[in-house]
Image (tube, rainbow, N blue to C red; front, side, top):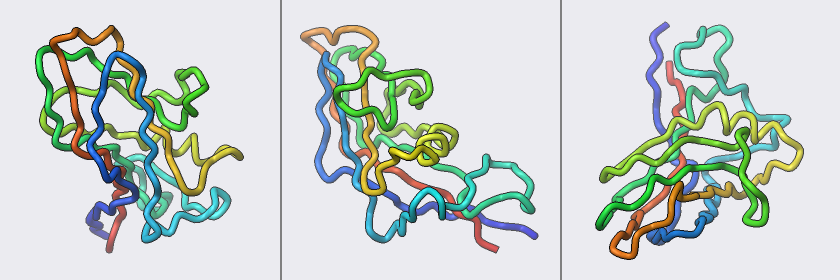
Length: 156
């Protein structure tokens, strides 16, 4: 059976984000239309290309960075998920490095799957930590128009 992946918006920021030399936390609020059930009732996430017999309702999860505008040469930002502002990031929450272009998308399927299976999973929000690898030069700047979380669902 041939199935088509349909993206669905799960969460998004409502205001632009301006990054500096310090770590920056973005709180994504899950949309009511996302119907985000407790972890015990969530379908199994599987990676793209898995067998249709074992696939759950979600095929993939993407974190999108839209309308990025940089000035000068900003540093690379490391992206971590589910890290409260007072906690140090760890490898388990690492989602990837933010590439600089007008739009970037990180496939966060594996990290998202791990996080939502934990007892401390927040049913309403996802913390996204952007941590610069190096200090930002005084002549550099980076703003992100919108950060959004999309899931891809299969349809028959």
